Amino acid sequence: MQTPFGKSSRILGWLYVVPALAFSLLFLLYPVVYNVINSLRTGQGISFGNFSELLHDPVFCLAFRNSILWVIVTTLIQMLFGFILAFVLENYARRFRVVLRTVLFLPMAVTPTVSAIVFGNIYAPQYGLLYGVFQSLGISDKFPTLLGDPHLATYAVQMVNIWQWLGFYVLMYSVGIASLDTEVLAAADVDGAFGWKRIRHVVWPMLRSTHWSLLVLGSIQALQQFPLIYLMTEGGPANTTQVLATYIFQKGFVENQMPFASAISVILLLLALLLAGLQLLATRGDFSIGGAKS
Amino acid sequence: MRRTSISGRTLAYVVLIVLTLFSVLPTVYMIDLSLRDPVQSFQPVLLAQHPILDNYRTVFNNPGFMKFFLNSAIVSILTVLLTLTVVILASFGLSRIKIRGHAFVFYLLIAGMMVPLAALIVPLTVSLKDMNLLNNYFGLIGPFTAIGTPFGMLVLKGAMDNFPRELEEAAVLDGATSIGVLWRVVLPTVVPSLLVVAIWQFLYSWNEFFLSLVVMTDNFMKTVPLLPLEFQGPYMTDPGALFAILTVISIVPMVVYVALQKWFVGGLMAGSVKG
Image 1 (tube, helix red, strand yellow):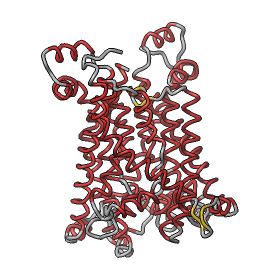
Image 2 (cartoon, each protein chain N blue to C red):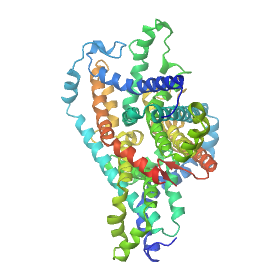
Image 3 (cartoon, each protein chain N blue to C red):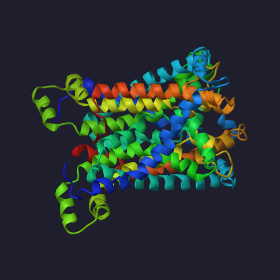
Image 4 (cartoon, chains in turn red, green):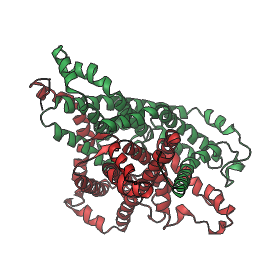
């Protein structure tokens, strides 16, 4: 395509891109390359030793499984409820939608350290808010120690993530719904597609690119979740809430085994690229945030 | 008017009320905990009976904590400015000048979005140490800018792509240089998108925890997300004061968002109508 800036600008124009490339190279690409090299360092020179050690490490396997679980549970729940809320706001509560959207988005502005401590208190036995609910229902003897229970702790922490991010999904779906083709919606009106039929056959399929974008963003966000787990359970009890991110921290910064931590990082990176790659392939690069399409 | 069944409408309102409460209650609970004396702190209720303000007095009498806010303000504001500069220049080069290989460079830049920070934390800390950037504001500002660039490019390049070619041609015929076109002609039309990027980047850098934890180990350099760690221990017997700190911490990003949300949502919507 012809631009008015002349031929020379296509070369000189590179100067505009240099700062962005410099930051990305220095703080994203170089660390990635360093990581790969560092992960191959073992006591006996360069080898895949750290990786084979990983496969035999039960905690790593647990962390890997939990990371996948985080991606599936948090992303899907956030998408489902984000969509439902956005649909309800746009169709049934238009008068209050701006206020409600803001209220729903607010947890997103709360520092994760704060939400970790607040939810720690909500889950606390004897004096927590949830305990109060159990008490008023007369079933306080059935109250589970959520963060101390190996089966429930992961989900209890995931709940905080869902609380924090739900508003973002509502917002993205609202933007998506607001930008739907009005002619198609008018045609749906004529055809008598309302309520469930409208959701199932008109609105949901039309939001395809929003779904995929949120799936990518949600997966990456879930994979890098660190503060909630670190502050609420420190990976416990018995490593049952450990994810790749917290295990990297433990190996690299607590136990000072940097090459081993690098190996876990490489696996985490590959997992993220695999998930994002699959999703981008499925949409053939139709990725959008709000209205910005690439 | 749209026809909807009564049961459908009822269901919609129930869902709306339940999820809104789910969204609001933890914050209400936090604020109420900050208004309790040590005895009431351990009552499992949403709202205490006798709210007090003493905890805020305790917090504001502790001089140390303002330093955290100053550090966070410096890091967040510089990150926002630097990210905007980097993203504006790159978007212009790729979208309007269309340098050779612009499509490839664009995908290269937004590929950074797929990299989870946790996977970079080890090498990033090592290289920041080599560059003498540990316990240095730029040890956070640099990586935050790099991490924010992909999202910024996606939003801003998208907005610049919609700029009409004719206006640009007219400016060039009038003798404007490329940087002049960017500054005076293109930039004023993408202000909503700039605000989206600025708000997003501010919330991100204000709230970031993981990198700050490993980069800012010196007490004088710590940022706000690390503040509760300092106070969690000492205030074990007096949770009211801890929750007063948490409330004070939350106020900044919440006020920023509420004050600017009109532009944040507007900017996202503006892109979508054109795109």
